[in-house]
Every structure is written in C-alpha cells, then in structure tokens.
Length: 142
Image (cartoon, rainbow, N blue to C red; front, top):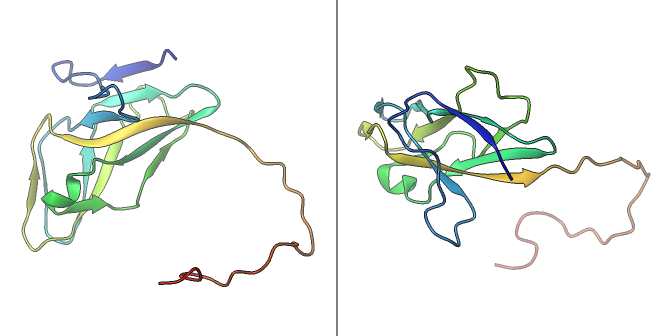
C-alpha cells in the first residue's frame, strides 16, 4: 500500500514500524509540549497522511505513555480519509492525570497508527432480535 505523507519538520523521521511484527507505526512529537497537571495538551505529530480511500487511520497512545502520566483524552483517534488537507496535521490529545507537569520533547514517539478497512453497513431495522439477552457489564462473571 503506497500512502502519501507530508512532514512539517523535515528533520524528524517518517513514521515507522519498529519491529517486523509491529501492527502499528510510531509517530513523533513535532515540538516540545508541557502538559499541566489535570489538563489536556495537544501534541502535533508532524504529518498529514493521505489515508487511502476505503480505510481509516486509527491513532492510539504508545503503550508506554501511561508511565509518563498521560492517557489519550478521547481513547483513540480516527482520521477520516478526507482529513488530508495541506495543513491537516495529525495531533494527539493527552490528559495529564498526575499532579505534576509532564514534558514531551521534540522527537519523542508519543502515538501509533495503523490503517483499518472501512466497512459501511446496510441497516436492516427489526422489531426484535432472536439472541438471548446477556444483561450488561460483568455478566460472564467476576
């Protein structure tokens, strides 16, 4: 799959898969960012990615971000195929859940991305479903 990408800071590397088995590629901070305690900060990821038609770009935190005291402000990010204008830089919003400021340095790998095929459903509305009702959270045991 060939994907067009624009970098803002040419001195930073392109996103890359760090191992042969990596499902996602790492994205780096374009600039240093300080996120104040209990606030959300936006980390620019240095790229606009022209997501191929029929796919979405899924952005998630790198698994080590919680060690810094950061968690994604909205869980994951979905970059639609039509979010690829010349200035549509991907950004990662992080919540600092600590009582201290957290500093991200330029070039720190802070997010990961992968492409996922989009399937658009054709809805068939019914009055009831034949499956057994399971209840809710925790219905399979503790």
